[in-house]
Image (cartoon, rainbow, N blue to C red; front, side, top):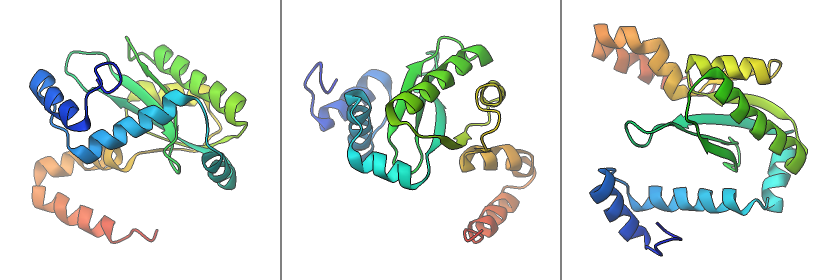
Length: 178
């Protein structure tokens, strides 16, 4: 919408709500478009590369998003520290094989275009995703993102007692120094 239809951010926000029922704010729209611009440019600014190298590599974040119900999931990968987009693709299947292909493409781009290692992985809790990561990057440390971790771990307690969930999250939030 931004480039093809030459819409402003405000017009994009209005059209997304009108056409798809998706409510966005200005900050979200701006951030999404900036990430898209960086990812599409396929030019890695020197400050990104320097920061990535100072971290000894990429902390690969893999996120499967389903922006519209009934449509295939959009997968995106980026460096956690710099938020540099590395690869994105709408997968027609959420099979382990499809996710393996997605991760392999990101891995190849990281090696050939940035020349750095993948030092860790953060992703959702989807079983096919976890299997694909184990296949493609078996020796790389892996963890779930905090949102999916909390959702996975606290699913049953939340059903039992919502207050218990709130108290537990507050307690864990106070342990940020760990």
